[in-house]
Image (cartoon, rainbow, N blue to C red; front, side, top):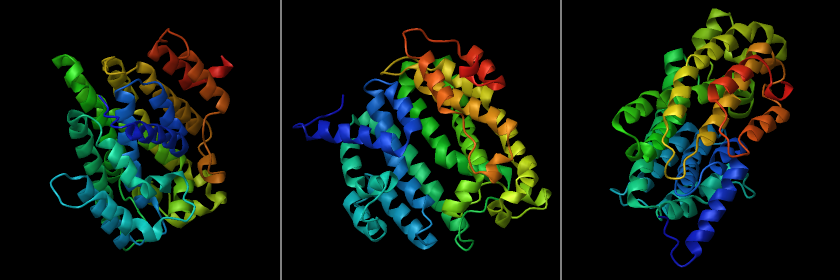
Length: 347
């Protein structure tokens, strides 16, 4: 159980849950469908991951500074080192804005997040800490790989999936690890075999829909250079909306790659034990939102570059949430098939 201590622990925990809502409305939907103890563990695991993610995404930091901060953060989480999370916070201080947005709030309040994390049972911490460490180390590795490029410039589809593994796949193993002991051996094997697919599906969808946004805001190009070269394009062409038509084959290739993980991602959800506060809705909702986004990307791939915004409507998000508002659990396969062809709220 979570150790509330004198009551300050409960206040910290509630603050962490509130911060997740500000940082990611989508992920907060997942946490809202969970109950304790899993809801607390996923909340804190997610916030621990957002600290290095904010550093890696920031165009304000030079690559050497990013690597240094990521290394300090990893050391602060490792109980085998003498480094403290306060030392990381002090090292990050020059880059924390005076009025930090929600993502920089994770960096600014890293000591509070880690303090709350340490109130979790040791068994939970032992699952979460290695996953966050792998994510942090992987991000540092990619920052170093492209230190002279001014931003990430992914070269191949294989490298893209390697990157997606570090930034999302580790989260899939975190969730599976927290549920591992609750599943029979055969189910456990299926969970571990398919957890990677769930994470890669979600991250590849993000890459496909945010090509222009990532380039404009982070100077990162996650779309593989080999796909750009095949169409006679370069990274600089992303900034020109007039190139929208030329990018259609690029978007479609990434969409096809993401869609290839749908079946195994569905198997992962359907194999999950409903224990420790878990629910199928928590993972089915982001899965279905990804299905709907893939449909929109297939329908209007040019908008990725032309407008920089391809997403499902709020009405469809509401329709998905409404399906899980009662006690009934709708059939995942049927909902997936519906959303692959048309917006759910239009049926």
